[in-house]
Length: 155
Image (cartoon, rainbow, N blue to C red; front, side, top):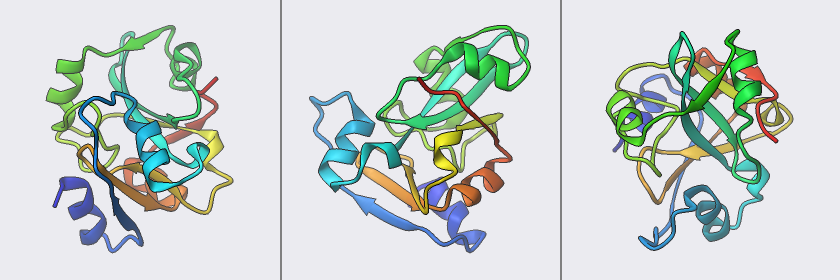
């Protein structure tokens, strides 16, 4: 049981936990989840940690079928620029390993921005806190739990 799942259970948030066999050779964690679980990649979201100028680490949640637009992320939270965070810093701040970073239940709660493409979905899929573990939940529930900003941050 990961901190992400514990949080959802404690808050009684409707969700579904899905598992798949992660291949160590595959580094496209989100796309692997979409493929192995037979889910539309536009509904599967990856959790990326960015270093935003003057604000520090920030979580970006974007579809695996898209790329994070770092300029758009910075704009969404009122900063001038952002870059992908060092993996060690991301792991230290979230308490999760790269490839299994969940936007939920992080060791240190980081500001979060969810791509606006999630808004039209009934359910979105995010990492459950380890490779091979996905959580399905309503986008509004994720936004509420993470106190997220919703903005167009993918390209």
